[in-house]
Image (cartoon, rainbow, N blue to C red):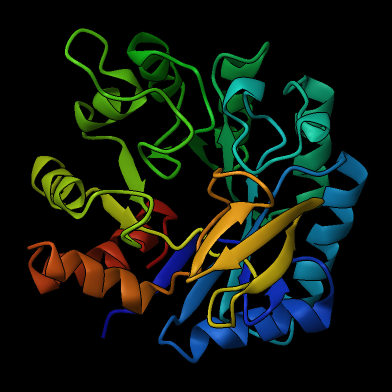
Length: 291
């Protein structure tokens, strides 16, 4: 039986991954109660020493819950122009010292990392991470299609929440999404919550990239919890009617999605049920190299 596997989610049940061991376990339990059998704990951009502490927290939680299978670093190597719900002051360039420090601190814990390929040293950082066994995703980026292709040639094999926090796909400049669609080596994350993407676009991507769509939640603490006021990293988030935005703005700040709900949204959009289930199970597990 396929194991629903979320490779990009920040929390749930009122808790964020990495804030505390108890909260990390509670967030995992909230998603497990909705059918997710394995999850990668995503951490937003924070000062490097804080990120290292949060990785230690996740590692400790993993000893008590085998459903947590590692960490996804969504930052801090992101474009300031496409930062989304990441604090600008926490973004840094992927210098060899910063990259090697995180790899060493992770010691095998890091499953995935998102990198904007236009940052100084980013293409070399992609290779360094791939050599360390980390799946590299292109995301939160101003890169055009040509630069995205360079990132893929250097070993990136994933696109972080496709269409969000990146250039769009237009006729003469197809951007990272177009480059990913054109490259069979690359899988594409989609947040199928009916908010981040038009359902018709979701179905179109399934048709255009069969077997390469990865459904993710990008869930924050309010997933499987109630509306209200939350914190994502260091930023205040308001959740109203299940939509999370940075307080006082219309900037989307993650989701309140579960993988089971993502499958429902895809099927309602016309995606065959088996394809939607695979995109939430077999495909993400293959991206991570899991049996």
